Image 1: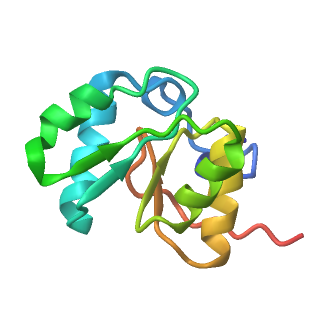
Image 2: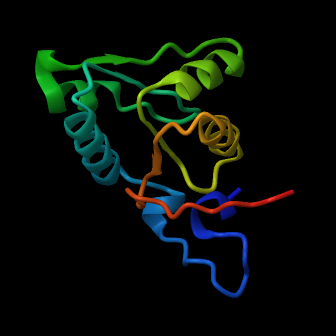
Length: 126
């Protein structure tokens, strides 16, 4: 799934970094803070199959931003919410992120990745 952020050409693809593959709490907080400020977000939805760091994200913003982590029984709920959000930050190598990113690209919604705030625009004609 990583071509969505590094490119589809093996000859010109960008290198993957640890922040892109396995972001730590510092990178997660940095990226979320950046995009909350840039989009003037009032809420953050966390979808993950790992540690959600809900408390840490809440502490970052206090009462200014509502932080939500539903843990739905079906992944399609997360997919829908993420595809409709004002901004989406995903994990570069995640196939789940790839589904969300493709949907968002169709409707020209902004997305970024941990470790890559402004991903290049790759047009992959099928």
